[in-house]
Length: 495
Image (cartoon, rainbow, N blue to C red; front, side, top):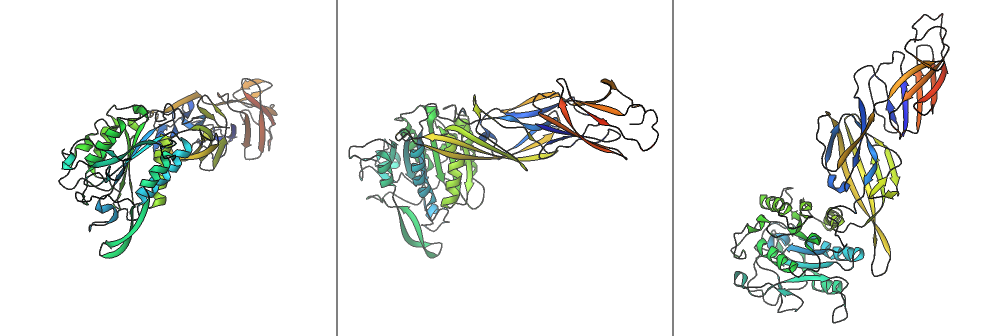
């Protein structure tokens, strides 16, 4: 870290922090007794989109940033079991006269893209799917690949879902699991009257042979029942089980899996759940907010607090971006490879990674009030089948706000502090408090209180003279000498 010290004739001013080097203006007014840096001690994804309040004495982000491989949401063995729950009610496509919140089927096209993404990162991951409206959409009588939901739920015995399927599993027909999943999830486009006009809409190519019990209503309970049944046969433990839930509404209709229509919001026995609510209103219903809060604290697994809820006015690209960076990068974290940190005009990039921390080249200074930060963290994944590697970038944005020193730091943020810098003048190697007319050559002694400082430069100004001096490290302090100029006969005490 470089420090530039600016000394005025009166040696009084206020303190400020520059964008490229830390600017120190030593002040006669009150100062903190110490200065500090903050260090991020857990995966920075925790703070994505947040404003972090730190004490006013914090002047920089420290040069150590925790990587994300040790985050609690990382599967212990690197292999997750993931269930997609996909709403197929009439309001998604617009068929049935209601609003069309996903007419072009982004919930399906993104799910198919995710199969490729998951397979590329962790080929032996398990993926299952439950498509629902008033009942589960699939029917095991059409394809034995589908798993029948036990019991006579809502009087319909053939309700089925896609069970958890290992993507690289070689099936009896010689195809991989991912190939079978893509087959039954193939998309098609049809035309229908939607919102008083004839429009195209995207849907699954598969249509059950028996549609007698299907309606355009919504039964969320049955979707979570299917997920719970699927996880009973999961190959991976509970902390490696995840639900990705796409929906656009509250329950509708009489078929609610024999439960209270809002039973799902209790979040009982449900693993970590990431919910995306499709809407143009930018607000999710209270039932999904309650469900997410309950799942976070239901003690199903250590990763449940990572459960989250987003709203989206969707397109394929918008939903893909959300799922990649806010969901899959939490589920499928790999080995951190490099990091870039941007704070205003500051940029620092490093590949140095030691004991779960990236080591930056220098501190990143804070602005007096609030500083925006962007972190791009590259994670490297190894394909277990081909041994090839690939990198994925996690993009993280947050702000840091300097407030009163009584603020409580959030978990994952720690401070490293040191005594605030001090300045002394010396003459003939003896510290002085007054300058006399015989003292032509003066010495500056600058004590940083910080072992990370690697250079100090000074700019001295008076009404008749200016000096720029680079100080040398003298062990206990940085020092340098300069010739003092006078316009007329000096008087005792003249600075």
